Image (tube, rainbow, N blue to C red):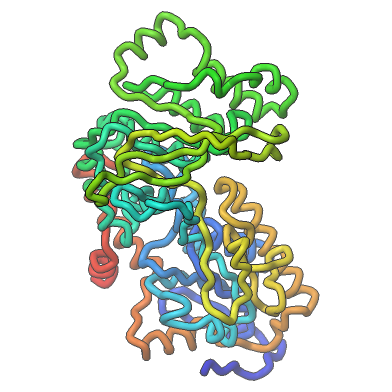
Length: 484
């Protein structure tokens, strides 16, 4: 049981040194605990410490390494997107912030124990589940979720046993968001482009031996509803060694309809139209003639079954229902026509969305929406409990979207401190008591300076092979380095 210390009077603050060697304020400071060290966790911490200079923030993370989907989700060939790590590092090194990796909340320590030790607990642990397709054959060999496939090539420890079979010619990616485009691009990228990124060595070797030459990116609605951004589409259009393969019929009426849509959607759709229908110029035609790999969107298609070979042990095709649209624009609905088509393929990657999971029975959770029910980040019917990131909104948007949503949660928390809704005048022990509990339970947290040892080893290994880093791929290896 976690106990709290007595009411704190307005006495001068006493400085004390934490286990990680940082100076922290006395037990009088407001203490906030954040669960999860991805963008949502770090942006929440950043805004909290900027808005309230007396607040102390402790970030707990299940893995020994920080940064969540910036490390394990952002494509290896998008290093500029990972630059936010520099900002997060500044936050982690702030004198009022401590990082505790290798701590699984819900197993090593309970949410209730954190609530007793801190004035506020912010849940920012993201979406580590997959949305199921709910179709026959989705458990066959050769069918993967995009989350796991991305985790495999980005070095997420629990995805390192995936060993995807890339011996087929055609892959089908279900979904048309940025993650789907990332997966298609990685499958078709020249190895020379990938070998200077931080993609893992096993993934690089598997992709070098890959037989995949054609990737179809399938969506249930039309060109006007694709969820990717123009940057990702442009990268696909310009990918060396590849050429597009579209169905002209999918674009019927689009040229007329696109005139009335907002500019970002119009530019995206016009690039698609140009790629699909225009006769390429001489230079582009020459490039396409030399291409050995093909990619293309397939619209108005929904998966209804993954088909197996006669021995039932692996994927040979996917059966797609053909849809028509009812309505127009973002609100258009896909309606079945009754027609189906089979597409031969040996690899199916489902990119239909990530899904948050409940942390335990005591924290409210909406199983239908897969979020924690909240008002501006305040968890409903749970005083002192907050949420940010995908757990708050569902898995939508880019890193900047998560930043804004996390700042909003931090603002709610600060408002509650300032208004007295959150009683920060009663002292709380914070990490002092949690560290003692973890020690008693045989859990050894990884501090931020421990992470810097891992970082140093990864960067050094990367330099030896011309990469920005060579990631450690198992928790055991990470802990060995951290505990040196």
